[in-house]
Image (cartoon, rainbow, N blue to C red; front, side, top):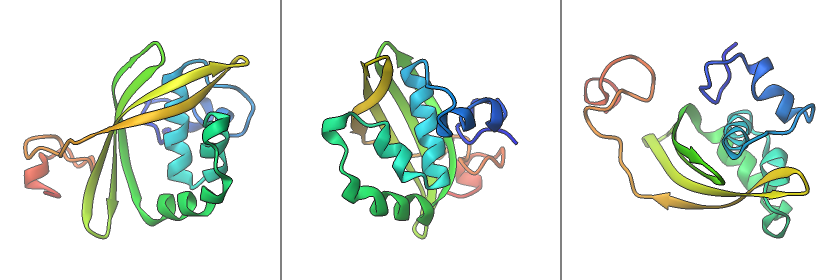
Length: 145
């Protein structure tokens, strides 16, 4: 099975070992991809455990889990990844239609491990001529738009 993070690798060779604690993500991009896979799987504990300590609020465990399970995750596109910054677009579908989360995230390397620090949400919309996030191969305007 291909990995949820759209790396084109198999899940058992990509995010699964990271999510299971067998390996640590070597770069911020790999951490971000594993966090996306955790959202797909509803693994809120992983999301919080990979956030910097001062921003971990375990009372958010259930809301994160509920949100991640209430939507259908459609895909991930990494726009930019360099140093400790990763910009990405995550596509999902809820009862109102297809949504896009476009974020520029920063990460911190602490005690030999990468952690999510914060993200800047970018106000971006799916354009009519973009490929449809549902992966039909059609343009958005001719498919889900």
